[in-house]
Length: 133
Length: 361
Image (tube, rainbow over all chains, first blue to last red; front, side):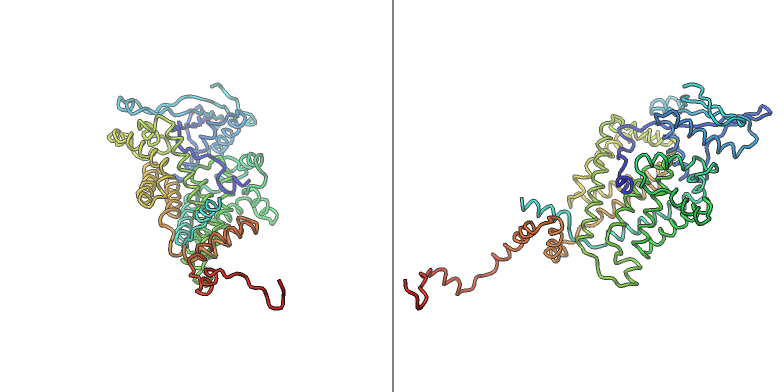
C-alpha cells in the first residue's frame, strides 16, 4: 500500500532500454444499409489523448486475453453509444511499425501490423468473437 | 563509527530555509490546476464506473484490490456519495472541483496542509481508479504531492503564514524532506539513465527518432525532424549521460548548476517536442525544488547543536547513543576552553596529599 500512496510502485525506465512501439485500435462500423465507417476512440483534449494512448499500450501489452477482450469490448460499447444505428462493430487492434531514419528517407512511412480483431453485434454483445492473430 | 553516524545525520538533516518548499508548493499548485483543467471535458467520461464511461472504472479498481484494498480510489467516494443520495456523475464532478480548488489553494498557500492532503488524496484516487489511463505524470504528481503533504507547511511565502504569523519551521526538518526528495530524484534518474544505456538505440540516436515520431508524441513533422538527423546520436548520448551522471554531479557545487539546467532543458524539450507538457512541467518543478539552491551554511552552524541533538536522540533511540553524540559535539568545545591558572598550578606542583587534621597515619 505504501508503494502506491507514495507513487513508487512502478520502475523508472521510461522509453528504456528502447522506445516501444505504439498501438492503434480501429472500429469498423457496419450499418444495416451496407455502409461501412471507420472510427477511432476519441476524447476532447490532447491531454486525454495521451491517456488513450496509455490505455492502448495497456491493452497491447497485457498477457491476459480475457482482460484484452474486456477492454476492447467496453471501448466498442462507447462507440456504439455514439452510433446507435450501427448493426455490427469490428474492432481491429494493431501495432504501429515506425520507420527508421533511412527507411523514412527512402519514402517508407509508418505501417500497421494486425494483432487482433473482435466482432460485436448489437443483438448479442455479451461475448466478443476473437478472429485471429 | 561515531563519526560516520555524525556525518550521516549531518547529511540527512541539513539546515534549510523554506524557499524550496515554496517552490514545490506553488509548482504543484500550478500542476494540479493544469491537470484538472486539461481533463475538464473528459473527467467523467474517463473515470465513470457505469456503462456511460469509456472504460469502466470498476475493472481498474478490482485489479487494484488484488494488490491492496486500502489504496485510495474513486469508488470509495462514489459509495459515500450514494449513501447521501448523490449520483455518480455528481460525485465525480465534485471531486474534480475539489481537486481544482485544492490546486488554487496550494498556489496561494491557503490552508496549505489541508490542500496538500486533499490534492494528494483526490489525485491518487483518480490516478488509481483510472489506472489504465495513467502514465508517468501521475506517478510524479503522486510523489511530489506525497512529499509536500509531509513537509513542514506552511512556508513563509504562503498566505497561511501571513495570516496566522506562525513561527518559522524547524530548518532541519525542512532540510530532511528536501534531502528525501533529492535522493529520490537521484534514484529515478540513475535507473532511468542506466536502463537507457543498456539499449543501443540511445547511443546511435535511433531511439530519439522513434520517440519523436511515435504516435501520439509526434508533434513535430518528421519531414522537419529528418533534417536534423545528425543530431540524434548526440542528443541520445547527451540524455544518457545527463541521467546517469545526475546522482554524481548534481551534488557538486561546480557542476550542480550545469546539470540542473541540462535536466530542465531536457524536460522542456520533452514537453515541447512530444506534447508532454504536464510531464515536463512536473519534472522541472521537482528538480528546481530539490536542487535550485544550496542549503544555508550560516544557518546550519547556528542551529546545528540543538537540532542535531534532537534528531540524534530521535534516531539513535537510546540514551547511550545520545550521550555519545553529545560528547563528540562537546569535546572540541571543552578542549578549546582555557584552564584556570589555579587549577593548572595545582596539577603542576603535584603536591602530595596531606593527611586531614586529627587523624593519625
